[in-house]
Image (cartoon, rainbow, N blue to C red; front, top):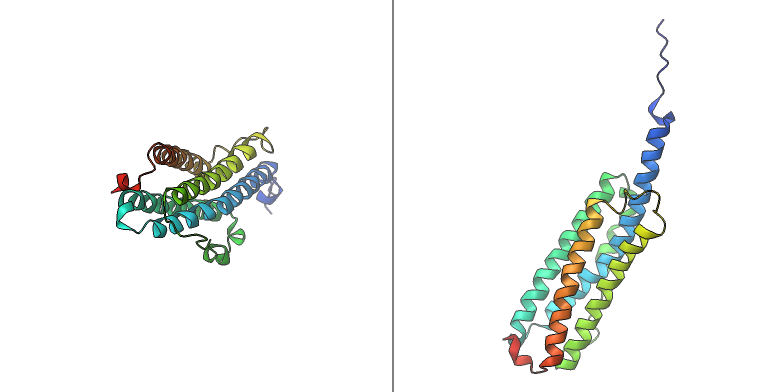
Amino acid sequence: MLDSRRKVPHDSPEISARNSTADKTVVLLDELLTHTLPVRDLYKTARCQAADIRFRQLRLLFDSYYKEQLRLVDVLVDRICALGGANRVLAGTFLQGTQPTYILRGHLDFSRLLCDLLDVHESALSAAHAAGTNSLQTDTSADRDFAVGQVVLTNDLQVHSVREQLSALQRNPDTSRWK
């Protein structure tokens, strides 16, 4: 009879520590997903609102950012599933969207739209940064996760671009410059 002294994998403290880290990462990624979906939805609304030919350049910008946010959603969902958190991803979350609440009619409405975009981006960025500095100070593997880095990088770049558009709009409220 063979007697094995080897520990069973579920008894291993290393595996339970890895599972704990994965669980923390899944929670962070799930929160980032809940912040990324409104950004995606607002870009979808923004590109529809900028359908007028006068805003062609802005529409192209919103369209490309919408596609980047879609890619981020895919990255987050894939990473959550890879870490064993597939039960946290619900299809209904993806179907809910923000409805357009106003129609763009001038530079003031575009300013409002750009400010709304900045707000949702800042919300996503603060969620990523707060989790990295508060709850995971001793274990930084979650905030170094590839998907978290993608969320931070993409939102940082988009915030910078939206701020440039907002400052250009405030300098020159004539919307004909977006032709």
